[in-house]
Image 1 (tube, one colour):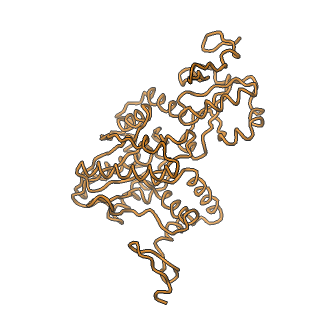
Image 2: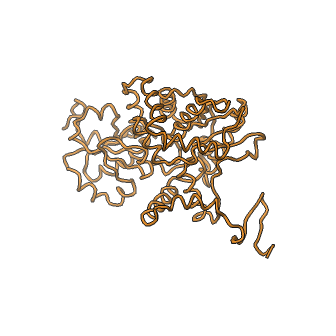
Image 3: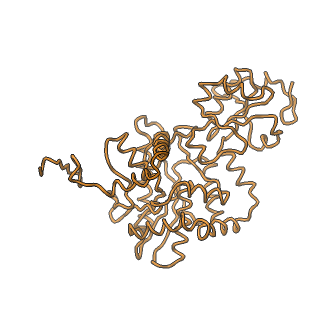
Length: 407
């Protein structure tokens, strides 16, 4: 017999799956229950992928990617005190249920954290006793002072260099709930305060079918940061749930179309997306390695389906590491992904690629940087220094040109 939250339990009985029709009672523990347990009595294991962990991890958790844990289960379990209970979590607490069951077969007491990392984020926000006004002021002051050179200056430079903001613009700042788009919203508020150009802003959030917790997280962060969001709903997640081939690509295309449509309906002439410098160089390299083509994310482009609409990317010159530093300095916790397809977050990126491929590319760039500190800058500059006299073929406005045409 053992004590569980003050109640005597027979562990073998408690761990037993009880099937009632198609329902199964699983072994779960929620965040508040976990907080009541002595920290020395359990080991917290984060089974998400490496890309997900970069967005944050629960304090004192050890990171063991799900593939590694399944491949070397006994090796990892041998490193953990046998008297400790195991608590595993993924992004939303679904994959971790399966892993908890598997670990119990090795004779270990194991729970899945209900709601996963997202539930932890919600609990952090719910217990955050810092005044909203103070949090907003701190975030804004850090943009003006501590991170002015790393964040605001490249934002302003991109806006000026690529002529992203023009007189009379009405820009829909598209907020997904992640760190990039939330920072972008704050930067737009800051540059508008300078009054160098007259333009209007609408902070647009599309709910493609988020669960209750994810939507609340976005709303809470927007409130804390003083961002007056406009939310509209769509059924995109439901629409792509049954798609087997390239669901991420389809989802990204549909999300883009819905954003254009709603922004136009609200009187906007531009939508702003939160792609940063690292997204740009990774896209260039991914295009070459996986797509057999040379192309980049453009800092701005005209919509082909929505007349008079443009897409702009004002974070174009901002490094992701600086965005993360701003987030962590202000103790902010943002939504990573709410994709329906996976729970460990090898998930959709806004351009339709998967984070697993992006992570591979990110690691490759990091490895190359060890011997060439200029590799990132050179990748970025490569699409600005194209010499057509040395190109076998290229496309312009859909028409293919071959070097022998003018040889």
